[in-house]
Image 1: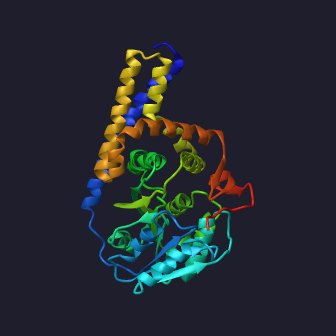
Image 2: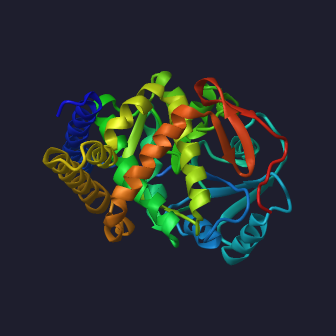
Image 3: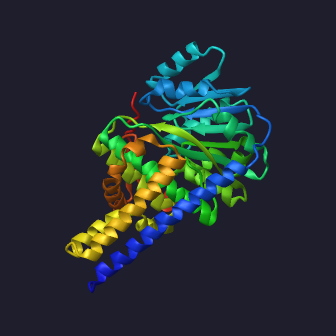
Length: 389
């Protein structure tokens, strides 16, 4: 080994192996401590906020899962910006099918910033009747115990937000499966490592719980109305204000639609550029998480030398072990379990997304193009939104 690039790649591969192996005790520590934590008694009334923009894949079952909660008193507020949005018909059917559920639909085109989801949440909040709030993405599906797990900790005045892990609940196409594999084999281990090294300083956006008072203490939804990663920033603002972000071992499911490869690539580039805008140092350091991809490049550069092949086997083995232990074992991801063979392809693509985040700031969201500026704020590049009707 005498080529400088080959030496650098080899060092990064070794660092990647160390990272993968370190994620395993991080996960073991997190889940063992979580099981030892006493549950906080009491189940205060709560309002669930679910912003909508077009009916999602599996929309009815997603929304209905929130109507089947084993919880004494709760309200669900759905919100759209356009009365002709296709999701309104699903909500109306839900109201008819669950007459005993407290369901409201908020319709408003009020704009407080560039993020359409946050605009939605801002006007939905006016219909919220309870102090405890849960925000859930519209593609999320939950079990009947969800509110009983995520809401009670809010009674602790030191806790600013409660958030939890998620895994894919459906992945009907190859592109969807590639995205699903990344959630629990790549993203979740990174969260666990961050939790171990520095504690939670951000939120996971699939589901977040907080009180109205905590939300207002950091400026309300207006404080994140121009941010692409509004969930990350909301959690980060609460953490900066001195509140604890509590990560629970509870797991919800995000139901991925039948994606095309193009749609998946566009979504992943947006995600990568959003992460870089929010955590530039963390994004730069995450290069070492792509050990298999780096090892494959090293094999090409070293022309298949014995050392390069050994490093490839080591990197792939460490990544498979991490994915199996965390994604399949701890997060119960059956989709990952059936698609472990996609890990090398996913890692190669993830390295491409990492590079794409360094080489541009434009993202596309709901058919509208934006440019990311400081702290991940969005500046629109066109005027035509394309929220599906």
